[in-house]
Image 1 (cartoon, rainbow, N blue to C red):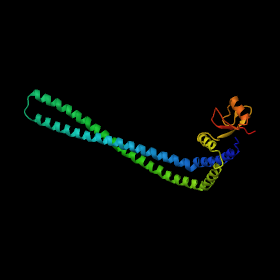
Image 2: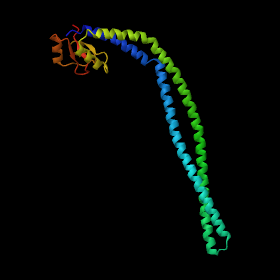
Image 3: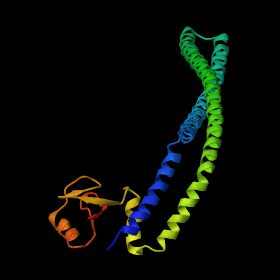
Image 4: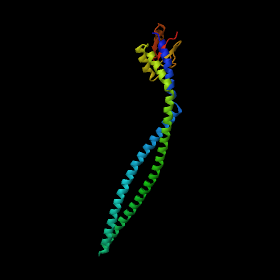
Length: 234
């Protein structure tokens, strides 16, 4: 099977692939992707900080409720102590009051820590929000540059695509389908056979039966190592 038309098709297709890679690896594309990732990272961080702040707020609210209860219990015991009591009762109330006072002190410290954590979180949230806005602004800028870069090369890309479509009408459909399947992962698809036994794609040795089939006039064979299509250029 002659592969001359397929080789010409591949030559044009490689021009299209080169143009695709030029766009994909362009500076605007790299910066656009970098700032898009940075913006997403900042928003993920902000979401995480929102959750942490909510949990901290819940804790502060619960502590406030506990403080109110402790204050109430202390007031009740203080009232009991003010009444007439024997020594044993007074000792009991004193111990209870001491325990409640310690609990109150602990809760006040915990609440103070919670308030400080919330204050720190608010500051960090503001800094992260500013970073997110900056990253997003740069993303918008470089995305616009990228779109302009693509537009500048759209004419050339469309011309190559039209040429490929026109060429496909004259190609063997089965061979073209094989080409497109391999093209997705390996380029180029058609590679020359280098004597005495080397695939021009992967550089590996091929089996003798493959060489024999190429020598028998079967112009193409699949490389058992890399899956590309080897053609006999002689």
